[in-house]
Image (cartoon, rainbow over all chains, first blue to last red; front, side, top):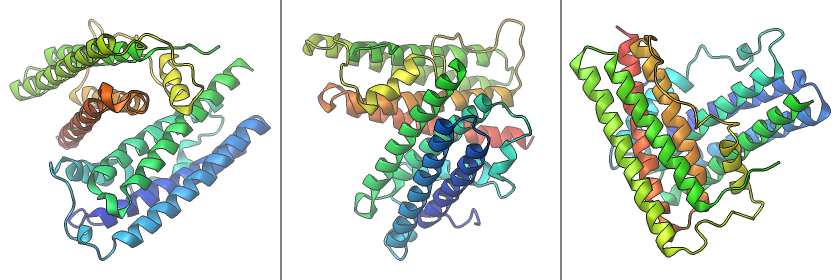
Length: 166
Length: 166
């Protein structure tokens, strides 16, 4: 993706990439979790990220050919600049491979911390997207995804707390 | 054991987050001789102080008009669980003093990274808070603070990219 061309359709592409990274991450995390419950949580999270990817795909299809492909709704222009920088420098790093966060012997707690950080990043990114996408193109669906990512933070922090006690 | 909190408690936490943020930016500003950097960090400190004042006003208004402002949230909802994970310090420690410790020297890149993390965590908390505070009690104000914090992240990321290229 060239940073010269960046619109709501491209933003959905980045969001899909984030969700795919999430799926890979959680699938790998499930393999190293110490018990059945934590493995299940990771696999459930993987499934939810897959569902989010599908929503962004649908949103992208709805936005393609719309006026938002040419012009973004961004009254302050800040969200657009923010997303472009984030996509270019941070989230959409072509070098990034989610499985690289798993070093041999990495403690489970550290893996859960990484997962929480990734969820926080995605929430911030989607908040930025929300400011750009008009309601008629599915802003409320992005709000729903944000709510779900917030619930992932609860799940992950609860698992971390539970595993620390065992 | 869960730790319960009231609407009023949420505002106290938000006030503390903003106070910590302002203290962080002021301490960080002292570390830099370059006037433009100092000025930018002090501007961010001022904005956090404005947010603090907004939360103080919202809290006063809430205590003045809502008889249940000090009642504990009883409902076992996801919104409460989400904020509980913050009040228990599982997501980040809000009670921790911020900014470089005495004698510690941070680079501009360190400061910017820490600042982005703080801004992101504050957005995470305010998103949860917005879900629990009724629209009539200032949810729209919280929303505008979220937008401002998002724009801070944008500013800080731009500066981080510039500083990384030096």
